Length: 533
Image (cartoon, rainbow, N blue to C red; front, side, top):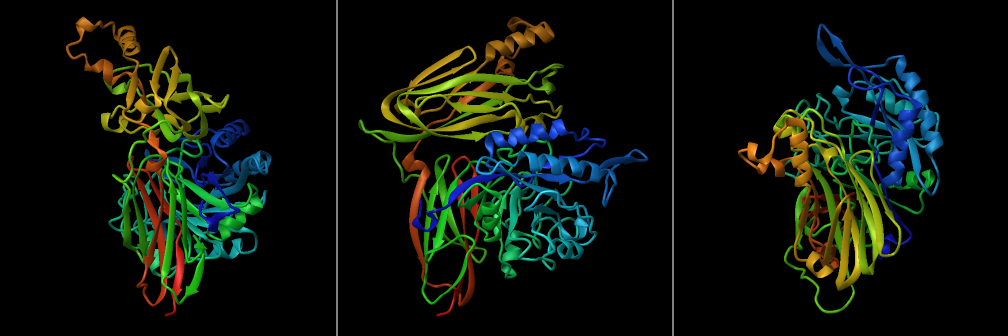
């Protein structure tokens, strides 16, 4: 860790899991349902700012419409949310914040989530963003714009209305895609109704107008499950896991965002850390350190919306050799499996129960990559951990949509220290797999339950292998576990320095964008330097 970040820890949370009340599409909100959500959050997150969703879907002449504005029943739901948040908060173990998605004229001003420092605050029913700002200045609250890059006036962020004090950071990425800017990674096109994204309300548009705000990512999940891997998470540099310490970090913009993998990102300029603003007569002395969850591809320093410097890490690292202890990360992912568009009427979720052991050696850390309920990873000894991954079936009748069912995939990343000849043993359900750490560094492997696929096809369709012209269908409908190639420390750790000798006179903003070889991305919050040469 860079010395400028000493005294801080990274805490992980999801500030945008939408909790719906009862309507045409969602079940009734109950204490039991909220407790299930909170348990799931505590299982793999450090903190959870809940986002109650005070909207409802209803039918008018058979046409489905989403509400705009207040409904009395929202207050009943809000009482349940307030109680659940207050009861779940456990300082230094798991921290909650009360919040909701603003249900005023978000079409005009853009979508915003409101969060409170304290419990039992009101559900604000302001129609305009100006009214909302006025009311929230009377208490301790923050207002976070999200998916800002849609068309302004059609739920994109209108930067003519922005309060830096109330909005210390902005959401750059979620299940919708990225609002970073034009010609930047990950377009804002995942929501086919609201998309596509366009310039005007993007993150870079806001920064280029001179606003100072941090950058986060978070899920915009609508399935009750907090912290869906791949939909976005926020990282916070705080001194301790309490509401007060996290809130201080929020207000000082000590935050950053990742798409899913919990990439550790440290970034400083002339001794100042992300979120800070300072004056300087000297060049910008930029330091970056990244500890990834997979092999790092490239790291970009962005200055005033344009790439200033790109560091390429691919090809710079080599596989370890010799008899020394080595540190690696090994990813396991489960999913795939049978799909309803092949004609299956009944597909149950798949439960993978097993263990991973490195001998001799030790498991240093475990990073969850969860997308739905029913997951657990537990270290039972220095060498061994147990896991349960529960994968949801591919239930869309559209073959294309069935390929990208987020809750189908579950997994974890295991960081280990051992020698090359140490043995990795994976036991899952009825399968035992053994291979050396050296072999893990050289290739990937798959456990495919094709015999189970054959049985399922026979049970539901009465078809034997001799009745099927193309036996590939057994592979297509087999549940699978992939054990990725292990990545050595030199592949997922980067530390470098770059000096910008020619900043623009006046204020410059810099931020860092990290990309791994598996496509996962991290964005730092900016640092602002006013160059006074």
